[in-house]
Image (tube, rainbow, N blue to C red):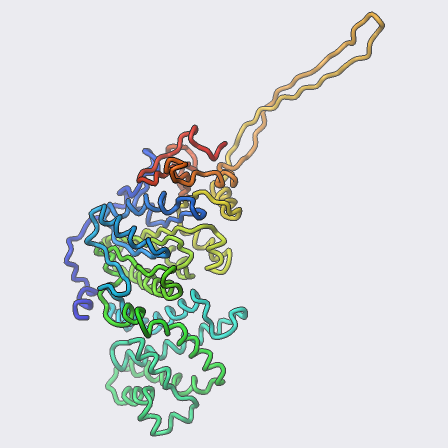
Length: 506
């Protein structure tokens, strides 16, 4: 832990690199480079299963970030993702930068210890851990009561319990471990009168802890914090209705139980040989905990690491001098929390390039809990790439996003009149009128149905993945419009589609 703590204080063995926001990460056309500054503003790629979002635009952007030398954090859903990323890094000369976190490997992340020894850990430590635990409850669906009630009391009560547990342990020991937290909560008094029992004070972990805190030489701030924790844990909490207190404790134990045994304990509660700030030094951290294999634990563990990553990147003292990093997640809806909207609002100033791939907007809504939350996140992600999709909600969103243009249409009007015969020897007299006109109308730049026809890659499409690309506030030079049809070659190139190849306009 000594090396770990020293590294956190800023002893960077690498030479500093000067980063220019105008460096090109990718080129969607010869006239339209996509730069680091663009990447900091966030990217989301939409595409149905099999539409080529991962092997097309996803791979193209990933290669660009690695070529520039960025470090970053990669979340995984599918079993082959970690291998693909490691192979990509090796092919681009970045193999030595890979840190692959997996059971049985050499890298582990004791998040409680990490939170305790970070610079200024004593400032907000208890609140941070409490917020993290509440975040885990949000992604797992665990609640101290029926989730249908949506009563904020239970989240707040869980935070209050964790905040006081962590505060007391940190003041007493100068660190916090998950095992200590759970030992303490298991031996809290069952009723207020129990606190006065000498036997309980001697035999229980809570009793011994607060006796020691009472005799310690503390600063005025520490003494006040310790007293506040004692008042809650030894007075208010045991005075709660038994069903209420047991529900709060049950929620906490359910959330942390996977980390108390097996590979989860090994990875997240023992040593600390990898941590988010290494990404600023160029490390490529791959969380090889795919959801197909590790299921709920895989999601929870990766959200924990992402949560610390986002917090640490925002705490960078001088973003102008900081090395840029990236956060990359395929099937990103699996890892989203409400914190993502807040983080993405400041990611540009922290020099973090977020790249999220997902299937459609309903998938995001299912995870984040509503349309407002989804659009709050998407509004802070300026580059949006649309692959083939059959979801009407996503396709209509794309149509509205690209906007409309004026179009002149020509019309021809014809009328024919036939007169009655004047006599038996006279022909019928016929006459007619013709008219031409022009009218102006508004039409979508990209129609929703056009996204259903995009090329999906593979041999039948000559390995070409068709997309429509949008970037907030940008008119593409190659088209003169805010919409650009780009073909991504699954073998590693991107090109703007010519009109002849633009199948979406047929």
